[in-house]
Amino acid sequence: MSKVLVSDPIDQAGIDILSQVATVDVNTGLKPAELIEIIGQYDALMIRSGTRVTQEIIEAGTQLKIIGRAGVGVDNVDVPAATRRGIVVVNSPEGNTIAAAEHALAMMLSLSRHIPDANASVKRGEWDRKTFVGAEVYKKTLGVVGLGKIGSHVAAVAKAMGMKLLAYDPFISTERAEQIGCQLVDLDLLMQQSDYITLHIPKTPETTHIINATTLAKMKPTARIINCARGGIIDEAALAAAIKEGKIAGAALDVFESEPLGESDLRAIGKDIILTPHLGASTTEAQVNVAIDVAEQIRDVLLGLPARSAVNIPGLGPDVLEELKPYMQLAETLGKLVGQLAGGRVELLTVRLQGELATNKSQPLVIASLKGLLHQALRERVNYVNANIEAKERGIRVIETRDASARDYAGSLRLEATGTLGTHSVTGALLGDKEIHLTDVDGFPINVPPSKYMVFTLHRDMPGIIGKLGSLLGSFNVNIASMQVGRKIVRGDAVMALSIDDPLPDGILAEITKVPGIRDAYTVTL
Ligand SMILES: NC(=O)c1ccc[n+]([C@@H]2O[C@H](COP(=O)([O-])OP(=O)(O)OC[C@H]3O[C@@H](n4cnc5c(N)ncnc54)[C@H](O)[C@@H]3O)[C@@H](O)[C@H]2O)c1
Ligand SMILES: O=C(O)CC[C@@H](O)C(=O)O
Image 1: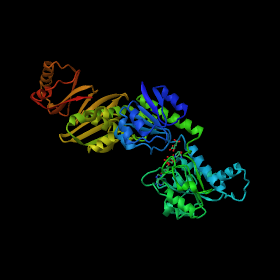
Image 2 (image 1 turned 180 degrees about the vertical axis):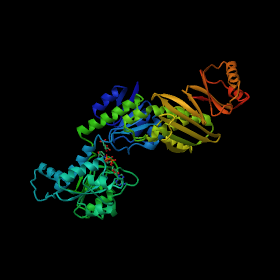
Image 3 (image 1 turned 90 degrees about the horizontal axis):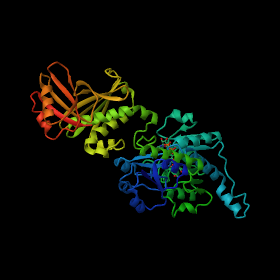
Image 4 (image 1 turned 30 degrees about the horizontal axis):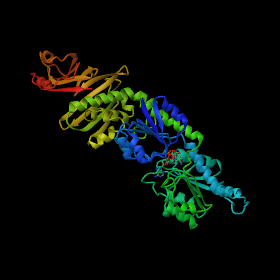
């Protein structure tokens, strides 16, 4: 049975799902060294934001197949290191959207009305109504930085509260922003004109300290800023200084450059700052959503099924993947075949989607072709996650082409590999939507289902050659299961495809090429 380690607190609903297929160990609060020591026994790791999955941990996780992040941000996982090792990383892109958006809105209102400090003063026995005079958000301008899932929900609710909306997001269209009721502007204008600014962007090299002393200086002295996205997007030292110097009116932060928040100037600021300990996703509903979402994906991957929200393999819905699966098997088989025909080091792979297939997404088929192509060199180490990276690291260039006019089969796939030993091509199609057939090898039409062990020859089409090859193989006790010749003209060049029952014993390939008329011979294992 598989083993799953849950290293941060997750809802029981997730544990119940994992327990259907695996032994589940819940072991939270581990130090990095402790995690490194035990991770080698586990097939899957499920985390929230508390566990930092470094390259060292990934390398120690020799059995790991999947890392599941019960939440959105995967910035606590070294995704490139996982990808190189062929480990799927999945998250829950939507499970806590509403929770995080509502936390940002709660922060905005709490900040405007000084609710945390007013509450604390009443609890201390005071009745101070002067200190806590607030401001209304109605008719004020909210600047939303990042108009994705959370930013859009915040915008929709703020609009209903009568706020005017500006948004900065270089990756969305003006039309999309207008649909949500936002005017798309550049960051400078948003900083200058907003009364409230709320951040909903991922932490990337581009967004790290995107809010700094310079951008803060553009804000109105009455404006407030809210960060429920990621620590490090705001330069905390510059923010503390801006509030203390009265350059801005206040801030509310749920996330910090370093968590848990240690020594910080932010703590010393009174009622103009609200700090919460990364609570954006901490609602009962969100925790059930993300736990189920991620546990289901871990269960599926451990059962050999695709994950629906993998961050390091093509994002295809389960229905699309289901439809493409037979073609992915075709692509992988053709990749294995063309790689072995090409031999040596392949430098260029051309993937051509033909007929009906030409309208399909090519990326999964390219990845499956590369997985097949690299199988000879990497065996089980190559998978859908790392095939692209492994190919890039080996300097294999990939060209994708489409030919919707190809009509021989409803849909077919042609792979051409060029390497240090020459160029070879293979084409295949699905018969009856499922059965893989090779339909062309090196430009010669054939129609054979691939088998585990095969021999291909390039020869001159002439009387007696098939018999001679048959006797030669027979003399070495090789049993031929099927044989077919593909030729373009009678007595011209031809290709022979033989399925054999066992691997071709060593040394026989050289004997085959000695048969008069046979120019080249290849043995492949699929
Ligand atoms: N506090 C919490 O507990 C909590 C909970 C959930 C999510 N989050 C965080 O909230 C953030 C947003 O999550 P989401 O689900 O809305 O993500 P999302 O991917 O749906 O939206 C992110 C948006 O940011 C935009 N963006 C990316 N780079 C940008 C840049 N340089 N400048 C401006 N915009 C940029 C993208 O175009 C996208 O529209 C993430 O950082 C996530 O980790 C925090
Ligand atoms: O695990 C958490 O509670 C935080 C999750 C949140 O930061 C996320 O990115 O989804």
